[in-house]
Image (tube, rainbow, N blue to C red):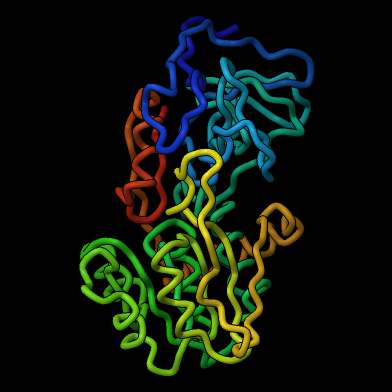
Length: 337
């Protein structure tokens, strides 16, 4: 048994509109003890992701809502401290959907071993994890990317968008990223190899900026944000274009019962195919895609960036910062060593 206290985050309120730190409470309890076929994991890194906004609602979604008064869950990389699982040893590095906490107990079935090779273990939560699979699936499996396509990625400086654009570049496409700061657009073009980038917060005429960056139109749109950015891109869709709907973060904080209209600018004449997707439907591809991404990272074909917030006490602030565009690349919370 490990002595000490365990800090963990609890959802205390279901927000209407934009959430705040008042919707969370940091609770201290004794470090839990693992039972039969369970292991105790000390969190190293916690992932916070935009989809978690949906888990704050008590409504139907592809992800179960968090229960009020109970610890929230997210993807975690951590070290096994105690184990009653035959194939999980003390000292193993593992990944799982665990509590927003310094320590968590999980069954053997809830834990996957982490092997990121020469890359840091934190990459198991982004380029070599769920965001990497999401980017690949949206670009290749759903978007059917083809050499010569013009591909636009919104939310392009985030964990998923930055990888989706690089995958399209590797496929031989012209890649245009849409992001919300000069730092982000410079990263996209100078380091990640995007052909162009549009700062939607600084251009006076967003549709004209998209048109200028995509003179031949848009063949594939990787949708991450919704709202005015999507309106501007929809006007440039070519015949038989594709839209892979990964997320619409600009709409996540609309008050309950208020729904955005659209897609207002999706023209019938283009014969565009729009497909939303859930990455868990493609779990069977996770191992092969991770190997491919790991090779691209090793070869320097794919680059990534992490925005790391220190301390479990700052996890809600890191999560809420996603909706203000504060992160570049993957937002992580560093909890322990």
